[in-house]
Amino acid sequence: MRPDLAVVNAEELVTLQADDGSLGIIENGALVAKDGRVAWTGSTAEFKRKSFAKPKKLVDANGKLVTPGFVDPHTHLVFAGSREGELERKIAGESYVGILSGGGGINRTVAETRKASRARLVAEASGRLEQLVRNGVTTAEVKTGYGQSLASELKMLDVIKSLDEMGPIELVPTFLGLHAKPPEFKNADEYVDYAIKTMLPEIAKRKPAFSDCFCEDGVFSGEQCTRYLRASRAQGLALKMHADEFADSGGASLAAEMGCTSADHLGKSGRAGIEEMAKRDVTAVLLPGTSLYSAIGYADAKMIAGTGCSIALGSDLSPNSWIESPQLVMMLACSAEKMTPADALRGVTVNAARALGRDDIGRLSVGEKADFVVHDLPSYRFLPYRVGGNYVSAVFKEGREVYSPQLD
Ligand code: ZN
Image 1 (cartoon, rainbow, N blue to C red):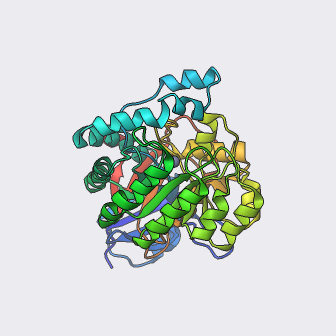
Image 2 (cartoon, protein in one colour; image 1 turned 60 degrees about the horizontal axis):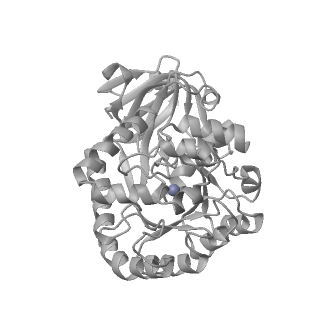
Image 3 (cartoon, helix red, strand yellow; image 1 turned 90 degrees about the vertical axis):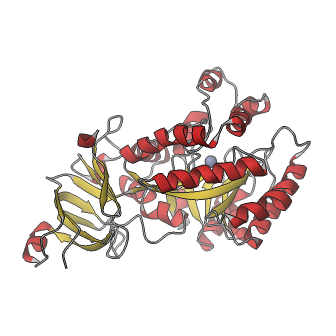
């Protein structure tokens, strides 16, 4: 076999492929890729003993850390405008819900996103996408939800599709049908009816990977979300939920009952709801960056892990919490939510893939996508420890180098 690519001399090659619960680290590791997939992993010494033909491209990691590419399982990457002024209002004591009810927050982004052309949305989002890539992200979920009308939600799906086709990384589209009630609807029930009857059937034809809703007291109730999720399932869509961000609204148990792939936020969920999620294999997506921005308290990661529920970490990149660095998310997960560096790394790789229902990304095992990052760091323990700079030396998507600082 002539490899397309071989990487040698990785101080730590973190495969996340191990039966013993470890990270599957290969010291002085090597990796071989063929046709965009991982074809072999082992030590550099073993690589030299193997009789591979000369690879088309040889990367000397030169003592650096190699991890699977980061998977961001929760972003609102596509939006128009920005809301930097709200930071000052939050510092002065206004709440997220208070800003929202005054026409700010999501409502402001919806107004700007509805007005924006596809080209403007692509241009604004591609700058953020580039930052994700520079920070080691090789797959990102992207939600709609700032359109809140059939035409504008379809426009958002078009934009996500265009960005995915432009590359260099893969985007997973989610229809966030219930994000907030748009101002032209009298009440949430009317809007839920509109989402179910008018939007879902048309949206489903585009086959987004997921349908999502924001289940929270004062936003959409459990009953409204149940109706919406049932209708989404009937349209053949897999399900996600924003649950229990500000209060325990029963979102975690509803996510379990509805068979969601993931429930996200969970800052206020009680143990009973999380236990139900664990039983039904629903992945918990924690978003500690949002907890920091909105000053709403952090999820109880220890309790969640104690139930056996798998934990993924997302950026929640949005105009509310504009975070483009998985390393920063890992640092917050460790320092504020008491996750270990190993669990935080699982959270942005293999468990993030689970949160997207995927088993071909998030690990470096034979047959899976050769998505990986070379970091100028000696060990995975530095990922949540040395933050604020950028130590990404190279990003590979399906065996192809898509970013390295030297190319800038
Ligand atoms: Zn979100």
